[in-house]
Structures are given as C-alpha cells and as structure tokens.
Image (tube, rainbow, N blue to C red; front, top):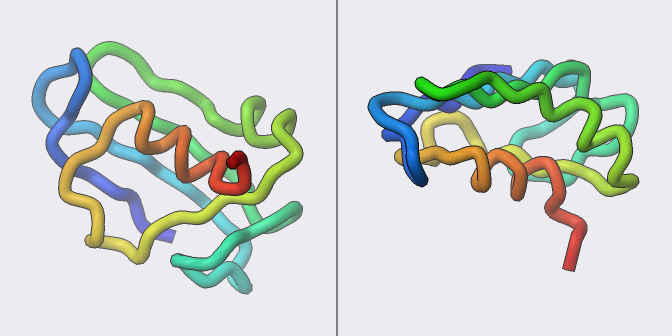
Length: 87
C-alpha cells in the first residue's frame, strides 16, 4: 500500500505523510477489518504517531482512499481514515 503525502494542515509546516501497510487482499476505497491493517503511521514536522494502538482499540474498520486522491493531509484526516465506522 502506498503512502499518502500532501501539504501539512493544522499546526504543522511543509509536508505530512500517512504510511499504511495492509494485507494484499485489501482494496483501497473499501472498509477493511482485522487482520487487514498491519501498520499505520502519520508523520509531520512535529511528530510521528503510530495509529495501530488507536485502531486496535476502537473496534471499527478503516477506509483508505485510493492513492493520490488526497492532496492535503493532517493527523485529523488520518484519524478519520482509521475510524470510518464511527457515526
């Protein structure tokens, strides 16, 4: 699964990246469940956040966009991708 890199939003400067590793069977743009997500990490000029503890503890699926479809990225955006089933 590719990384999503774009203009950093909400308090950071420059570029931000969201890196995910998924099972081969996962199709971007669809909801994935355990054990589809193997790694999820957000990085900007302030910090790196490992999203796996959040995802493993939330009990919901995830939904990553098709690569290249996200121009700007923030920690909040990445968190929404990890928690799409929350209404």
